[in-house]
Each structure stands twice: as structure tokens, then as C-alpha cells.
Length: 188
Image (cartoon, rainbow, N blue to C red):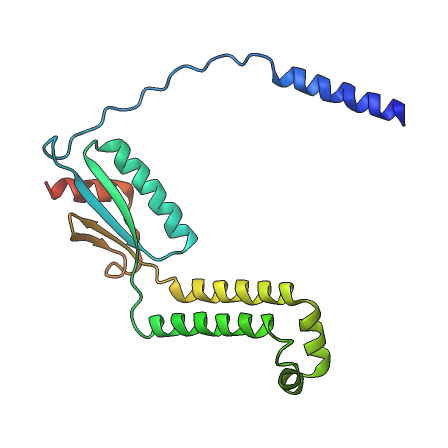
């Protein structure tokens, strides 16, 4: 036992010693000079509305970073693309059902007799014994369904509140960074 402890301590000291060595300094990376889009005192606001899918959020972050690197007088903001009916109604209904099922599960002991009749005593016993897991499952299934409903494929680009690109109008094609830069420059 003592021998194993000594070996572990020796390995730990070696690893600490390897990590503490000086790392050579990297050369400074020069950032490209930023271009001024308009007068130095004014700021151009680029608003991008997109559905909350992971790919759209990742693409937004990339576009925001690149535009703010390219232009010095630009501010890129994000907004959630507004859902329209019937998607909005379905989305809100799913949230309501999700909350109802979570509350029903949390307080299942208070209404035991009615729930045992509806879902069966074996199922009720399993749910009652694993309330936290059941609530987690309900939550994550609800989030998954909401993500599907919310995924409209929208990526709408506005420059000073004027729509310059709409994926909905362009059959779901997202604009390239080069296209966005060209469209913003045309707005001068």
C-alpha cells in the first residue's frame, strides 16, 4: 500500500514538473485593420433574427464575430425569430402540458387514488419511486419537442431595421459572410 502511494506521488510530481516548464512565447498575431462603414460617430446596428436551433446559433456567433472584426462601427445583435400561428399555439400548448405533467408527478402522492386508477398501480408505483427521474424525462422530452417546433430555419438579417436577407424568402438558404458584408456595404 505504501509503495503504491509513493509511486502515485512520484508520478504526480513529474507531471507537475512537466506542466510548470516555461512555454515559449508565441508571436503576436496582428489583427486586420478595421474598416469604418459610416461616419466615426455613428454605429450601424445589424439585427439577426434566427430560430433557436444549434446550427443557427453557431452560425450567428460566427457571423457576429467576423462582422465586428471587419467593421469598427458595427454592432450585431440577436433576436429570437418570432413564431407565428399555428406554431406559436402548439409551442405554448407543449409548454403547458409539460408543466402540468411535472406538477402532476411532483404531487402524485396527494392524488394517489385517482392516478392509480388512470395509469395502473404498477406504473404509479414506479413513477412515485422515481419522481426525480420522471420529472427529468418529462422536462427533456418537452424541450426536444419545443426545439422541433421552434426550428423554422429562419435567419433574417436586418441592417438598421431594414431587412436585407431572409432565408424564408430564399428557400432556406443562409447567406454567406461575404454576401452579408456586401449587403451591409450597399446600405451605406
